[in-house]
Image 1 (tube, rainbow, N blue to C red):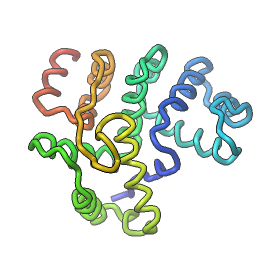
Image 2: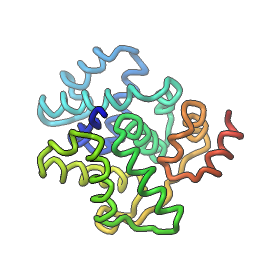
Image 3: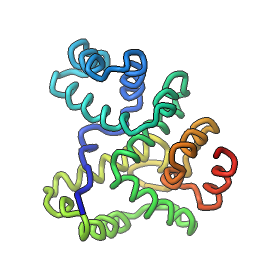
Image 4: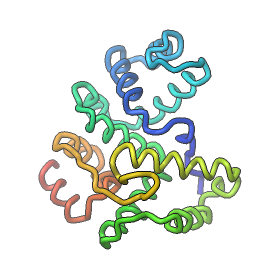
Length: 207
């Protein structure tokens, strides 16, 4: 199988920056002009040219996975909705994070097991390394960064109480964002830790 896309290590959730870049794109409809605003004009207020380039490339990858309606939802979204919408773009862009949320965190929550252990992550990683060759070829430092940044994202959006204790919390999704997910692809509700019954209820409601 082809490898996982693992470039999310370059920047964590970045909800504010994602919102700024999404709104610039919604205004112009042109990624090149957005790139100029981010890199040349420094609208996201990042220090170095290299960090701005890296941020733009990564956030463009994430935002490009969203449907037109989802992208447009950045306009007028609340702070919690911006975080959840940005997390959706990460689930759609990075299947490693999506798989961990659905295969580990969701299953634990459904079994009333509310804490992610280091052994849960290690078992998941080892099982995926059988199929995804690039998990075997990256350095130990990169492996550590994958774990660190992913759990930081989960903390930022409220999936866990903290990176240290990793107690699972079911995130809140607004009705409008739930509808936008269902009408695009309801499977992503599972990444937000919805049970099959809850997903089916939302499908009946919004499709």
